[in-house]
Length: 502
Length: 35
Image 1 (cartoon, each protein chain N blue to C red):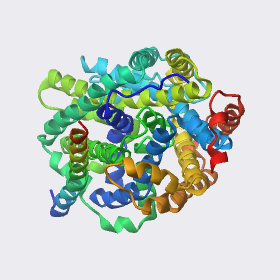
Image 2: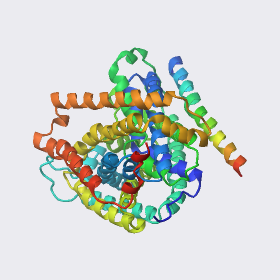
Image 3: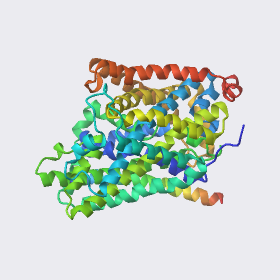
């Protein structure tokens, strides 16, 4: 076995983990989630979810990767060969996510360029997004060729990812100082500007005003657990791969806590930039905030550009605000994107002991080809379907399998006995309880809840054949692929299977 | 901003950024001791 890649230092690892966790969702998902689930009161189920599922799972992934010194698939295979497909499941999930994530990054590039001339000003941000950028076709059945602005953005994203990952942890250790710290500075600039706009305080009040009666609604708790799970890059093999590049005797618990606090801190502060600007937009248009408050793609590429269009100070100010906002999205997104690629690279390198640089190049080429689907004129529909199914089933199942394997086969105390002596904070047996009972119960409930919802009402109103192709069919294909990959001969897992020692 | 929104703001700031400060301080101290 060759010498394993190593982070430049502890700070580089923590920054990379924060960079992976803090992505576009922190800006476009958390603030709206809080607003629509009881405002400030949402923080209570959110913190409970962090304590009972987010923190236990991230400690699990950090400690597993660091102890095994392997990526997700080989780490699981080292526990028992039969569990290797579970690790591949998380890696294939990462593969699918990054293939469309690059499409979203492509849109952000287009908007960054468009910000210099405020390209959406005359036609409105909705027409600009769906017409000029996406050139959206009539439905998922009509791909309609490439949207060249999106294609250019996607290619640019892949080139950037390649150059960042080219030298493995050596280059990533340097890049993360920029990609993690710069969006925080940019967000602070956005917050200061938006907070001084008329109507901003009212907008922020909507974001934070607690409605404690909502805590009795179980949907709020489901949303809190979903948010925590998605935001920490769990169930994608990333944290396992990243931690495997740390020496075996490094801290685990405090690194996990820093990552969690920093990631949630970015989410919380994003809400001020978003709702401050939306408050101004609502006041300017004389409409209630509920008519402009939104999340996801609609917030980032339609509502927010429209809101900054109304800023006082002329085109120069609007353009500058646009540049800062889309640079924030791009810097937040790029380290999440390359962490997903790294999860895949670690999986392949650890399984077959191949040259990491060559694997990185080939993984990016294959991903680039897959991502072409999302650069077509029908790409948004496919992105929507694939994103929904992979998030609601792929990731949750990945996390559930990890918790079950560690909780019921490997035994949580085995991992706890490993990480407690080397960690700055010691974790009690409550962690075992969470991994064994609470985390799997919550994830299994989320899985079944989503499943029941989709059986009674298919997602998004798409025709059944598209649901099958991009949703259920994709998940079934994933099951086949992970078992094929797990059964393939490798150069590491067989010899390292720990089952004989348990 | 309403009083209850300000209370939630302080609550979040104390938990999130207070937590971040404590954990980062601990890591920094531990790193110095190792050196």
